[in-house]
Amino acid sequence: MSHRATWKTTTHDWRSDLDLGHLTDVRRRLGPPGAAGGLRHLILEVLAYANDEAESQGRPGHAIVIHQASGRVTVDDDGRGTDTRRDGDGRVLRKPVMATPDVRFIDQSHAPLLPDGLPRRGMSTVAALSSELVHENHREDGSWSQTYRYGIPDEGLAALEPRGWTGTSVSLRTEITGPPALTAEDLTSFPSLNVEVLLPDNRSSRIQ
Image (cartoon, rainbow, N blue to C red):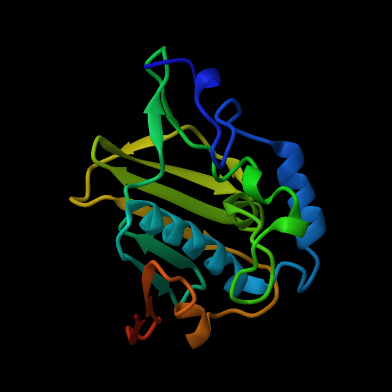
């Protein structure tokens, strides 16, 4: 265990759990009708992280996108689970992916494009634009959950019973306007990820 200030920043700065200014700016810029690219873009943002994880492990990953009749969408992958550590005081800390900016995409002029042609903005933009988002991560050494409303966490991490396999689950509800669903081309655009889509009527589409 060590102090969080000494932990290396790769995608997010471990020193802060919450950046209210960033979340407010996201909602200002991307909250107007059509600005964010719709639910489709938010799902692509989540899948991009799952693809990163699979690529870093050098293996094909799997993600399932579950659409519920209520409008809620869950993206569940089989990676190692979001990086979670204990600091020098023994506190459990998860990488602040939902409430602070991804340092790789702060300069949008150099951000890679997602399959919808819009720049990748980071997982915190998904949280900032979701009226409710539940982030679960399952790792070999434990499982935790946290609920966010427009990117702001309700409470601290809550421990979960292990589910038997590792991975990250992001379940969200959003009211933004724009394209609501992935296209067939979207599903084939993540080279390290196999994507399955489960629709409310339990029809399943898997394209590898």
